[in-house]
Length: 225
Image (spheres, rainbow, N blue to C red):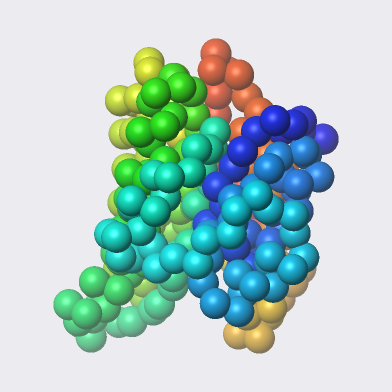
């Protein structure tokens, strides 16, 4: 198991299916958590998990940046995102705004919040969730979603290129298929063909413990079949 004792990690999307698996993995590894989320799902995470701070924030609002900057963290794990499908010819400007806001803007705001401290301490790790469609650069029926997740990947990889010499690294996680979540099961995804969120969580914990001279920048995680 990864050893993250003495590490403070900001986890966004707290209470979501993936974030819950990640949170448990990080706590088991000894990390101290700052949970960021919204409403009832955040409250459930707060009741179930130990946390040094709990922040109820709208990460699509740029005002959240100043709140996040008040908290010193060693790593950010950003799981906030959204998914929607539409035929390309039926997509609207509002559809584009929504996908970019949920997937890219929230990440940008969080990075702007945590980065000043990471640069001052000359050490930090930023992990974000992209998607298998973005890794393949195709997304039938989900062009806007794929574009927003591709933006996430490009942003994180560019950050790594720019900041690694200053001690701050980033990692893109690509689930190469649907996650095994209650919502996905309800939509008809078979658990046998879905990715176990606990496996994704373990991979993230592994990335967080890599030394600078062996850091991980991209992780593709596949279902069994």
